[in-house]
Length: 304
Ligand code: C5P
Image 1 (cartoon, helix red, strand yellow):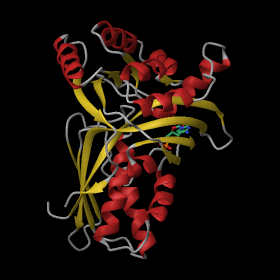
Image 2: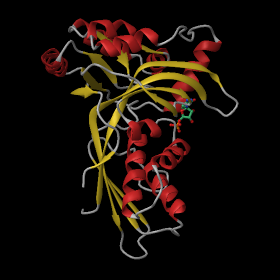
Image 3: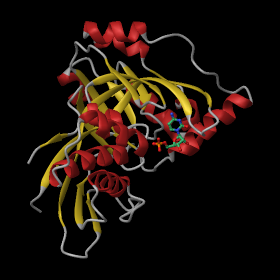
Image 4: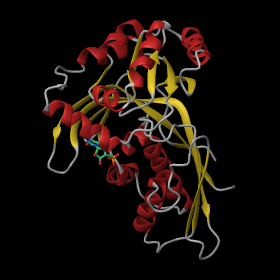
């Protein structure tokens, strides 16, 4: 399809510290996001007259992706149209997915971020990035970071972002799981585990981690990766413990559940080490799929 095409990366959380449940149903977070080279592509084009919004999705394991206005990309198109004063324009949105669906890597948020950028161009809407960022935050907590990319510290729901100086090129091995996890369910499980004393928020700051990012040393970064949602993800999907163990047995410097899971990510010492680790992990046949990914990479950007 010819139209406006935008590439957008997945995210991982190098640190994800979760505060108490807020009255609005969200949790205050302190997180360090990194954008990694698993890329979705979103193309938007003018639709046939009276065709409405048409969403199509290509990729593996996409059955769970809604094609109607529950799709976050469709909601992003509606938000830009409203901003532009367009009344329900006909638009086609094609999503080429490499980011796992409901995998803890912000796949849906990435597609929404890409659609914001693409529709701004398609309809030549004269608004700056700050306005787009505001729309992004209304759509979902991770959408602003998918626009920004790189490495950044996120607070609030995750939508208040400050870029972090990152001196490294980090090599990750991404292990896809057979299943999916619902983000609200993982946050609720985190609250439940805390209420019964089976989990606690991690204390401390990310200063050391930020220093390790600046140093570019994977050996320094490895012991500092932290995810407060990991106990909840493991409780809901116990097989993830074996995946994490397998990766570290095979020589990963560290392994962690990505965001709310169930995708797991492992840190390699360098490119060759990560590629070797990815091959070995895939060879065990014990995870659904394995990718090598590099971070940080840029946020959503136009490619055509
Ligand atoms: O912002 P987003 O719609 O992606 O969040 C999905 C769900 O994840 C929320 O409805 C909420 O249950 C949970 N969440 C949370 N605290 C955050 C971000 C998300 O509790 N900071």
